[in-house]
Image (cartoon, rainbow, N blue to C red; front, side):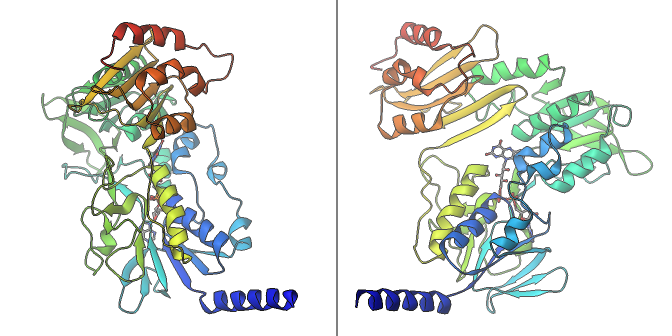
Length: 453
Ligand SMILES: Cc1cc2nc3c(=O)[nH]c(=O)nc-3n(C[C@H](O)[C@H](O)[C@H](O)COP(=O)(O)OP(=O)(O)OC[C@H]3O[C@@H](n4cnc5c(N)ncnc54)[C@H](O)[C@@H]3O)c2cc1C
């Protein structure tokens, strides 16, 4: 009896999922699209197709720099073997989607194919910003985002004989990566940064100042408070120099790297019915205004920002979290994107950076900062806490590796800054033989005498 019931339940369930089998089409094979595909496959039998114009297979975009620097081959940046996709019944298509026909639930690809979808996921990422600079489309002017950008860089800057100088425009995470890449081939680099101090819109002065010195120490010609006026062409249409706005100085160069931020890569949607602003507008369930159409990752824009987060979060972890949440929704378990506490990590030349919670570059009226910097000028932390009740708000660390799960827990538990300082050693992730600095940091914190902390 029990046995029969068991079988009938399973047969019914199997039939149900057969009936409900849908075609889920994902545009974009980056971290967000691929996370969705993998999780949908774990949860269901739906038919899955992933379309990408960039590469046949998913690769780690954050590892692109290591290919140019010779630490990795492109093949090693692919987290999954080529057989993985077939084995997991994830169909891959290499094409650019020109149009989304929401009425008929169809995509129009640049190879003429039309693809029907039951559910559509737009995960088309970002593209480098261009601000209408004269000469921005010349040969030798490029961004650093796609696999094709990596190939272009290999062509434009194979060595210091072909590329006698590169000028990078825009001081952020990608700009500094590009500078590091070029320096590994001994190519002279001038780095134009609009702000008075590097990444000072995000980092407090102490950290930003340390990075200015670190960049200069790496023989990168850092020009702060400097804007690009124009990129000049030689007679063959290749870049030959840039002109600086403030001084009129003309700098000869063979490559210009445009790294002044990114924006959602959604121009193919502009004429259609899917509502966009800077990105594709979505609610917490990552639904767009069009039925059965969702958007995730760098190209998605929340109608309303979540907490202190930006409405568009162009970071790796966000794409992954959105992909996981959306897979649940697509498989019948509606799940909101609830990102939890902010964290991120990056690298500035040889200084690793991590951030947990919120540390604002310009203190909010309720916020107090404790800043410690090592005398070697390559390690520092900034801890933010509430000036009224001393509660821990966030931490930035440079040159000291920390444990994500510990800071996440302390933020959830609403610990005080004093508690965090007292237990800092627990959060340290540096290997044992590394020098540890907790005692020095704790002594400095003690002298800092924070209010109520
Ligand atoms: C050099 C570099 C370093 C980075 N380092 C970090 C880091 O250290 N930490 C961090 O958090 N983030 C980092 N990022 C950002 C991070 O890589 C992105 O946030 C993330 O890759 C975005 O993933 P995504 O899936 O949303 O989009 P993407 O990875 O951009 O994937 C979108 C894909 O869709 C394709 N596509 C677009 N339009 C179409 C169309 N119409 N038809 C077909 N295909 C289309 C694109 O070609 C692309 O392949 C870095 C980015 C770069 C470029």
